[in-house]
Amino acid sequence: MDTAAARDRMVDDLVDRGRISDERVAAALRNVPRHEFVPGVSVREAYADRPLEIGEGQTISAPHMVAIMAELLDVSPADRVLEIGTGCGYHAAVTSELAGQVYSVEYHERLAETARERFDRLGYDVRVRAGDGREGWHEHAPYDACYLTCAASEVPDALFEQVREGGRLLAPVGDRSQTLYLYDHDGDDWHRTNHGGVRFVPLLG
Ligand code: SAH
Picture (cartoon, rainbow, N blue to C red):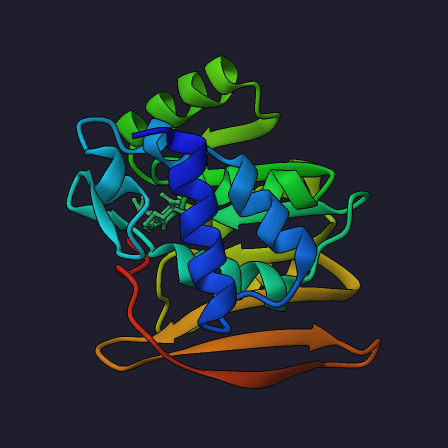
């Protein structure tokens, strides 16, 4: 199957189902070759709207969740973004289509290394650090936006501290029952809005 056609079909379907309304997000998902991030999976599976296993007991979110998160985070081309949980790198690649520089922290050394090689090969300018994302990546702070692709029972303070005033943070929060929250900083304090129930792998450490 032609991978670009499969991708177009996936995005058309997400738009039809009302999962994507932002043109920029649709364009980003049309550009990123998801099948390259999940080797050993058929093209049909790679472009189905389902989560997939990526090794080390981890899973990549379904495309609609990546789209929803991209729309909520609403990054622009000049933004510096911090991702916690690189995994296979698919979500970071989508973000890098929309943002300026993307920094990503991955707990599993092997996943970090594989993602790095993949970004190089596919030409994505995403910087990866293997380590504990609960500490963020302070060398490159402050970030305009930060998001977690794993669920925390509480968002680590270090992550709030590394986002600039006026910036945004998006995170699945909770243990067995999780909620996707968008945190906005209004200059005085963080305020959060609830974006519904979700299911992510846990933040480790
Ligand atoms: N965005 C990823 C989704 C990966 S799943 C993708 O597109 O593939 C969540 C990832 O978070 C897993 O790879 C897991 O290893 C990682 N993770 C879990 N706890 C972490 C932590 N404390 N610091 C950094 N990464 C973590």
